[in-house]
Length: 312
Image (cartoon, helix red, strand yellow):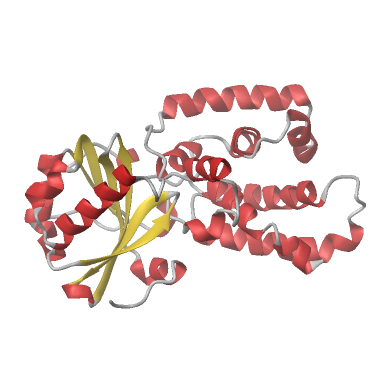
């Protein structure tokens, strides 16, 4: 029975991550779900599938966690963009404030067909998960189950113990809120795509040689740079270049190790020639240009989560 329950771990982690916006909280939620399922398995009467039953448990765990939590955000949600010439990026905010990254390996099912994998990557993009956080928790459940996991309205109604019209109404409201939150469109990451491979190769060379002129040519005109847990964020190639040539110039002589996060291209950044873990860089792209660079600075927790070494 434990082995059967464990087959759901990756998809449940993805579901809980979309609900909670934190890989660490998602893993806690899944572990709690597994414990509750183990203890309650003898009372499972088989009127629903095991998958529906365990998703009901996971949903209740997430709803309980969200009842005492604030909405997780990105720096762009907290205020206007700052100046690349700033010398003070602001005081770090607590982890509970921020939307965090998640390793692809923890949430994407192994052996999925390519079309399904594209949809899965799209539904864990940082911009999409950030938009989900604008939804009230039960609307979040409805939208994820209906739009992402393709459950029927009847299945969702059974899980939540409500009527089908209630599910349809909640989905309609969730869609409207999501549209207002405007998750930015972006390219779906396709590791074998030659255009994307070329962009990432040029980014790696430009960053490691700290060629800011080359780096800015890869940025979209509205590209953003953010650095959670710091509240400062920047918009536009000129502001990003100003930051990187000034206050952020300690990133010279960095080394990048490619990883996969949130269905997006990402890199582990080590400063001082590879000796100092510095950030997990997650990129979002559109039409062959980089639209967002998020530097997650909590390497003490994130690098072990991604299985990364202390130095390279």
